[in-house]
Image (cartoon, rainbow, N blue to C red):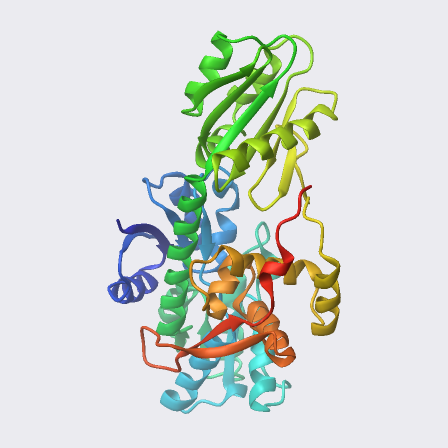
Length: 426
């Protein structure tokens, strides 16, 4: 079944990404076109069912921050990086024969522009760059950016504008000011779609994971109308273990779509005295049940009606529905700490990388795979991999061809005794 990706962006972006999406198997693009990035909030509030939302850039993503709080699906945006800026600058220098000193540029983060200049050995002086990250979300004024380009052009300091915003480009063209939009490289667009697809598939996989709800308090006996109503809300089957203990078997997705609702709060408050609930996730029903019991023990310590969740990765979240915090119950292996110190990487990151290897169906992986799992940038994942390669803890085992022309991506494999650092009981 195809992954349905709702793409929110301007018309030119939509044209390019729709064509490139044809190269990716099992991806369906649902386009939502705006003329101004501020429209992304209203668009997000009126999305039809989809698996993930992909924004054309940081602006529409930031403008939809309030609407995204109500999404029950993941979202991400096309990041502007050094490659985008470098390709755009090269296009202007090559096709327009305009030097960087005679160019005005607007970018989300000016540090990316500075990094490009450093990489090519160009001096940073005499460049005209405006950074609008600090304007977001409340202080953004598109007219300020247009005026920045206009004044430089009219004063003769620049001959052309390079803009990250389609609506700025449209206004500059109306004013008769030569302009070019930032060019999103095809490879970057495809990578963005692949990341969106991978994230949506991971969410779906997690949503289908076995979950158990453990309830045990003195006033609870079964059959019970409130328990049955709660079970129907999370599509769970009910199993009684003892007079005051009831287990509900369902899925992770059903739990996470219900736990933030007023109905769950009302369920907790409907019991006399303190009501505590533990939710557990696991690869097997027995693992999920054990995690649910542990989660409820944490809820019992709160002395108020609440719930905790313990995931398959021993990650503890709670108390719900208020004041939710996170902590890891995994004890770090002493040998892992020693290894992390020699590699010069944090024990937490090394532990996550080992867990990544243990849970994958294949031994080989790319930097993009690791980046998706750790939920970090590609650059951060590559830095971790380089440290592990330099230490001899990761080896390069092959190459993976990309969907477009360009260098193939390296395939890696961990070369450390990952099974020596197994899961530990909390």
